[in-house]
Length: 327
Image (tube, rainbow, N blue to C red; front, top):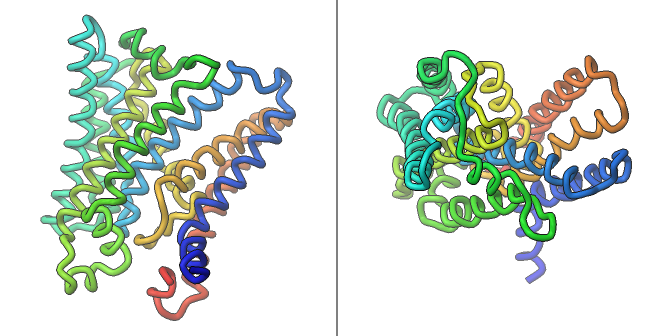
């Protein structure tokens, strides 16, 4: 029994550390905020954190297979531009528009999967190329910022539930329950972990490698589309911004590492990545609360991002056998 608990603690160590760090940092932020922790402050912080958390979940699914998705930010941008165009009108039109946005994101992820699986290209090369395609499509949809979104849907996703609870947290919980947990507990999800640990060993063991990769990339695109829809609900507009796409891609990688997910695949959890994203967002809020000069804030966030990636790779220097990473 003790050995089993020890194994479980090691398995979830990254998630627990990310959760503890986030709680400490957010407590400091709330205690030092000029307005205190009221419903408005909590909702604003939650909306920013949840947006990055959704993109971090998308990145996690691919990273678990020992890949990386550099197009995830551009899928978000494309979905944002598309949502600002079609998620308007009658309730039926809005529902169909939401379905169209989510289907587009899933198709983008499926395209990445097909190229990686059957084209046998490296994920980093594939997603750089497809990211450029997705950004081009976003520009075709929205040459200048603009558009609109159904206000009822926007309020439902970015407003407050009874009791002042941010609605975005309910959205995040729903994604964990409906997307992450079914994937994690399924045969396909376990196969994704096996592929990330050792694709050769997984193949020799009869693990459905192609199905695992296809599911991971497709769900990644779907989650990125949810992020794009959420951006539209926050801003009430769409914008084909390469800067936003690149920023969310890089920040998602930092959040994944801060959440204890191994960049080498096969280890970690989307829940850990969520707390990594919330922690990364809280860093920026802390810099604001303590009145750090705005020109210095990107520098500190860049240092944290670089440190996160370096820490993610540090364990490799201490092992002689790559399998020790999962022991």
